[in-house]
Amino acid sequence: MQLATAFATVLLATAVAADWSLKITTRSGQTLTTHGTLAHGCTNYDSQFDLSSPVVKAEYHDNTFTDTFEIFAGKDCKGRMYRNSEGTYNIIQPYTVKSYHVY
Image: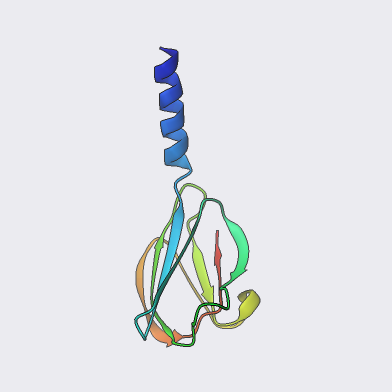
């Protein structure tokens, strides 16, 4: 019985702590996916990624702890911004993205 209870606890913890993911697709066809478990502050995309091509699509899957994403044209979550909740979205007026925020 204790083994069954322990297994159920682990299974529940895994379901609750499932990752969120944010995938952006650029006009040039490049994709970049980020993920995490908890909400966090602004995150700049690493400079090793070439994000000079405008983002045309954003795909976000939330979890228990998050339900909103924002992508920004500038570093440190400044400049033009797009915000939405879970789903896949075509960015009508594409722009280059340098940072994001998930909460």
